[in-house]
Image 1 (cartoon, rainbow, N blue to C red):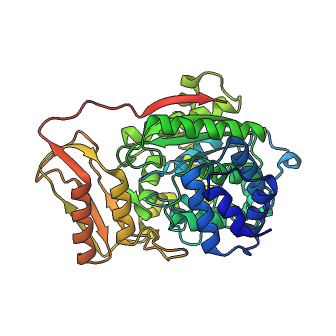
Image 2: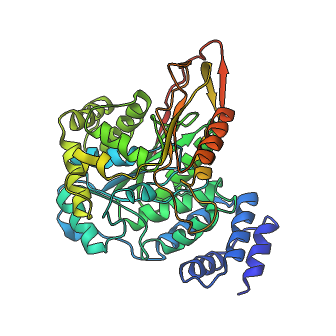
Length: 437
Ligand code: URA
């Protein structure tokens, strides 16, 4: 088969045959397709989309491009369930959600991604923890999930390798915001993880890949429908991404905020609502708790009672992190050379959240080209929520940068991304909708 013909078919708005999709996925997984052809087809799919049948075929082929985990022989006494986000800025939910869900009786084999486009990635963030191995062998991964209830790792060589390659190419070729490509990317990893059930966090707003509710619903329905074809029961929670989630955005700074949350010291209201809604939904979708409010209460108690923090500590240690990481995270996380506040005057009324994500890339906290090394210490902390009155006592945020020149640029980018008015805008709900498969 000539791959140029496959590209031309999609370029001209045609439908790909099963054999063509399989050829594409095989060439991704074994590296035989060159990046320029992969990015060309990705752009053609981005522009002309795929039918539901094509997207489902692509998803299943990508899931089967490597090892598919099977938990049936592990003798687990609870459901194997996970959550995945479509991507946001400041989205550190996984660090809290995995140990909370584990504390409530779930087993969470979380296979996360690296940063994608302007959004951050959990795999990059876990690498801030010294010694933490985000790519253990499967036997170790299974052992840790079984003994602690969760393990957050990155994509290994063997798990959905086709997605691993396509993901890194989409990241730098402007081909991320495509319903079939996002569906296949996310579900290939989740199907390969051998889950019983999944909760999707479908982000909507200025910092999401889907900026409007209708698009977010289209993506949620595509994921739920495709997951059903693979017998993976999925619920989707549509959550707001019109501003940074929580008070930090970057890599190490988000891990630090997550530790403060797990230690029940600082729980930003919007972040808390998203964490509890998604964790609660994991208990609902996996049949552990029929009542959503009760489920959220159980999740909250896992934090206030300290069980989630303890599980995170055990998981992180089992993966090679320091035994006292939760207690002494500040000692271990990389620190930026320049840390200084950014001031503005007025009420923060609007945020171009994608521009905030791009400002982090410019600081060195995200990638501009495939495989680029990150500066994990940079980003923003103390980020004011929309509605905050800003003045010389209340900064917009604190910038963490490698140099004064970088901090100057980040400050200009952040100020340009924020709208200030005299009056506070009407409050916006964080959770828009829950869709059930
Ligand atoms: N997360 C993924 O794993 N893939 C995407 O395409 C978007 C978000």
